[in-house]
Amino acid sequence: MKTPFLLNAISPLFAVLILSFCMLSCTRCSEPPKEPVSDSYKKKLISYSEGRILYNEYSRTNNAILTKYRNGEPDSRWYWFSLEDMEGYINYVKETARKQHLKNPGIRIYMGKYPMNHPKNKMAKPEYAGYQTIFLVPTAQNLKEDSTNVRSRTVTSSSDENKNVTDMAVLNMTNLAPPPKVSTADMP
Image 1 (spheres, rainbow, N blue to C red):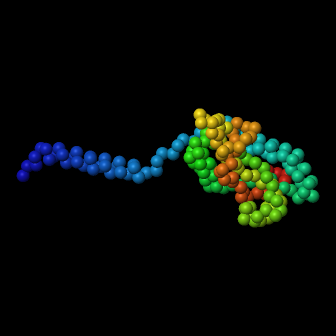
Image 2 (spheres, one colour):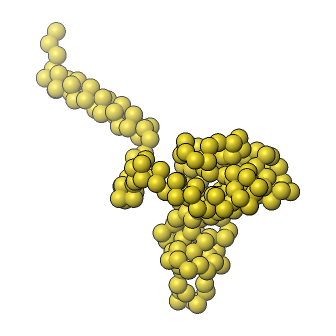
């Protein structure tokens, strides 16, 4: 029995349509493309040996004064956040800034010190009481008054172009050293 010409022509076309449908279905299931990350940070990179110069200068000056003030006990020399914590916090700042229509979001790093009676659940470890720490504060571009003369209440004044965003959470709970004591003469 002979197959009609039209049926012979439709079979391959039908197979191509089914294959195309399957391919399109699979591509819709995949992750959406990630937004490109700027490489502007590359202009701000320094070598490890240049970092050592900065560390040694801090050791010779500021840390020497702190150690003397602390009766020979060295203060914190470095602070550590996991990449997961940093990525999560950066995403939190980006997303919150987007929802609040803030421009040029950033993060300012502040120095601080845990009081001796600081709540234990507000430090990465209770033995950090009395040591200096850092904390990260979200910032956004200084907002100008809009046409309705209403100014955003989420931004406080500062001398820099970007202002602190006071209604976003601040990141702390970093690991620091010492304790446990580490050499204050060498950069780890």
